[in-house]
Image (spheres, rainbow, N blue to C red):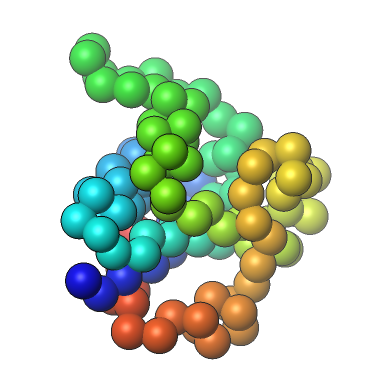
Length: 111
């Protein structure tokens, strides 16, 4: 199965939830799954958003994604803008050049 790389472009918790859910589905089907948080979207790492009843909140969904093998990548500029550190947020730090250079035959989705 082809991989899936999802770019979250804005600090919108609904988009982040959709990205994590889609990435978990791709990983469950055996494909590589990556979620890249661009610039201000990196702030979502520190956000705890309520979820609809019966669904996991963002913290729980991140844990599910991690257990599923989803790679979470934070924009280096975004980390600097938000004052967050990749290691304390349990994400990889990266940028567009590396993301595109390692895209291979992944499908690229922007949310």
